Length: 145
Image 1: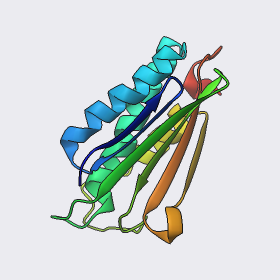
Image 2: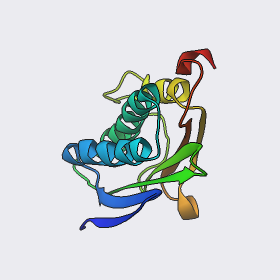
Image 3: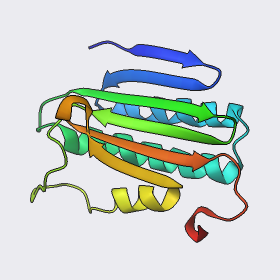
């Protein structure tokens, strides 16, 4: 599975193997897009943490141990007011795992950092799709919305 990359002044999209070393470049690309659109420092910090956590969730949870599937990230700046980031996998979907290596804090953290969070089945009912929305300019800290 190779890299697919699409980038314009107000959008970014990439599909990569869901492995740990791909998380940081995706996070940097999305934050760079937001920075280019004039995002506040705090928004960029929250965005980096949320995107990193969402991508790490795919790496750790989406596929059975030993399997590597796609990690798809798309980001779009809407009317220079907000950025919409979608993280998609083609894995097992959101099912309880008693052997989960995580603490279960990632999704609540993402929900707290973003202005809007939606989680649903992936396209054609395969995997999971997580959509986060961040306002580029904030008058109050993320936790006080």
